[in-house]
Amino acid sequence: MLMQKFMKGLLAMGLLFCTIVTFAQTGMITGKVTDAANTPLIGVSVMVKGTTNGNVTDVEGKYTLQQVPANAVLVFSSVGYLTQEIPAGNKGTVNVSLKEDTKSLNEVVVVGYGTAKKIDVSGSVKQVSGNVLENRPLANLGSGLQGMIPNLNITMGNGSAPGQGATFNIRGYTSLNGGSPLILVDGVVQDPNLINPNDVASVSVLQDAASAAIYGARAAYGVVLITTKSGKKDQPVTINVSTSYAVNDLTVRPKYANSLQYINYMDSASVNAGNGVYFSQRIRNGVEAYYKDPAKNPYVLYDPNIDIDGKYVYVGNTDWADILYQQGSLQQNNISFSGGSDNTSYYMSYGNSRQDGFLASYNDYYSRNNATVSS
View (cartoon, rainbow, N blue to C red):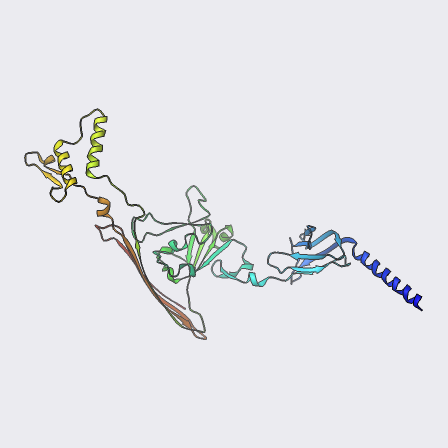
């Protein structure tokens, strides 16, 4: 009786050993990968987990793997779909149906005359929200978008006049004559420099040739889509008030030579050229006297015995950069109302912006008033 039990135990161990040996064997695995609609998926990565043994599906969604251990785990992955891991076993054939990764593909972006989910967009789309523009003193929208969107190049004006707008460019210079993108505000062609940055909800940039399929030849240099804020249903009344004041100054103020340095330079240049001194001793004496004591000496020499061309001579030492230029300023005030009920929504705003320039002798300024009503 004991002998029979011992023999049965040995037999069981032998069967277990044979089973383990069988699982350790390698073989070929084939199969087909489809989506939820049973459509073949092309380019799906099929890998043996933990190894470099893998392949991709062909145009019919089929794949083949060689030297696959029976205890291996197959990993199926593709962009836009959830990754699945399936034991290979001794099946020989493993068919898989991948599910869409709706969490990453359901984000809504502006792509044309409306919105679409990222899963439906074939072109390159970059987007930023209006949050990047809030609580910042911005003269225009362009100054707030600088450095925020890749491949969107924004060039500001040279600063010679207040309120000077920005120019937009996508992907750099695309032709010998340059080229600017098509810019739409809520689907309408408009100058973005006239928009109140506080009213912007999002900015989307269509960067590649796919935008031409929507807008045609006008989108040859890309498209910038600006969406303004709107009310939301079932939202209580929200009032936002903001004000800001900023001081601007020239990055570099020109430094001029003083009057004494000027006559020394001119006299030296004239002598080096083989001529005599450029200025007379009378003018030099007047410049030196005013330079040493401006309060007791005149800045204009007058001699009634000299003809009209030389009767009045300026010998002052005025810092014209300080006289001509002053600090600029930017003041902004914004107020908005938004909200909605079960059936309606609304958004109303008013913004005032005033930018004073750098000219001290002229009251140069730029003023903009924006009023918006949307539902």
